[in-house]
Image (cartoon, rainbow, N blue to C red):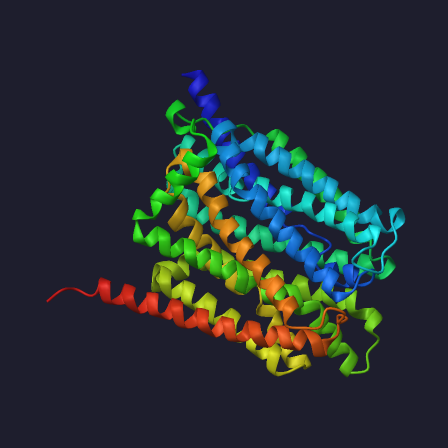
Amino acid sequence: MVCRVSQTDRNRRTADLYQWYATLAEASFWVPVFFLYLAAYLPLDAVLILEATYFFGVVVIEVPSGWFSDRLGRRPTMLIGGVLMAASHGLMFTGPWMAAGGSIESPLFFLFGAALILRAGGMAFRSGTDTALHYDALCACGARDEFAAREARASRRRFYGAAAAALIGGAAALIDLRAPYLLSFCAAVAIILVVLRMHEPSVHADDRSTAHLVRQIGACIGQWRSGLLLLLFLYAAMMIVLNHIPYEYFQPYIEAVLGSDGTAVAATPAVAGAHVAVTFFIAGWVGARSIRLRDKVGLWAVLLLATALQAAIIGLMWMWVSVPIMLVLLLRSCPRALMTPPLNAAVTGAVPTRLRATYLSLQSLAGRLSFSGTLLLLTLAVPVTARAEWATIHVQIGLSAIGGLVCVVLVAAVWAGSLRRSEPKR
């Protein structure tokens, strides 16, 4: 009896520590300057290829990391992710001291590429596994019904942690563009320490996967027999692409606005940092209320609202370069905040424990692979030697706006279908 209470307490403490983990997980101090940082040493085509390389790296590592988690445990998988993330940030910080840049053939291009591959591994080893650990820990201590509300609270903490990191990182970049990567290295070390204090959630023996990787993937695909899970899988992949477009281009957009107003472009890192901070604070407020909104209007209505909002933001970025639209960009993380807790709540509980991390990783992989391909296609829309200037970027955002409109139409059709199915039969 004493042993059972102790195990329950450990699982409860792990679920509580997850809230601190969530605060640190998105504390990426480099977010306000990553585009400016890479563009300071490399041409535009090299910057976009590096970003595509990162997403391709996640694609390669994503599903094996989920299978590793389902087979060997959540905690060791998350520890590996933390170590890889720390190594990535350390390499990004020291890179300009170690190698020369200037072109796609330069040593610094390949060094940055290695750092981004490490970051891809860090993201992959925590993607899906952290959500699965949270759910497993709550199930193990008899608090499964708390998952949706706690996941919404964790979403708020993620955004608030990201907001504080963006504000600090943008200010630190005024001293040196490399400083945000040093701060991110420290945050990654803190994540490792938090995960070390966690315990592997206690599960039944048959809840651990014994299948090899190919069979595990096949079992995950078999979950699509549920039409709802298939639609949610496709939606999640689509929104990873759509949500990343404003993320990818908001820094050069701010730079274009500051330049058009005659303001010193040197202020861009601090302005971008403050902009990101406010963006994430707003998103944190929205994310904490996403489950309540879902309960009022339904799952697909919330998902449609998220899609329409992001598509509208991309369209406005394309049509105007102005301070008012820069303020509208403060809402760019609200779609992710709106969709993530309801989506996690709908998917996580519907997938068996032995498949959960692999399935969530497969879902993330589909989106990241799609975005990697999107980045490569966008590079084909501009000259190979083009610099990171607004005239070039404007073309890419215009193509993205058309894609966003198509996404809204598709989700609206699914929402309308869900309404018809829920109507009482006469």
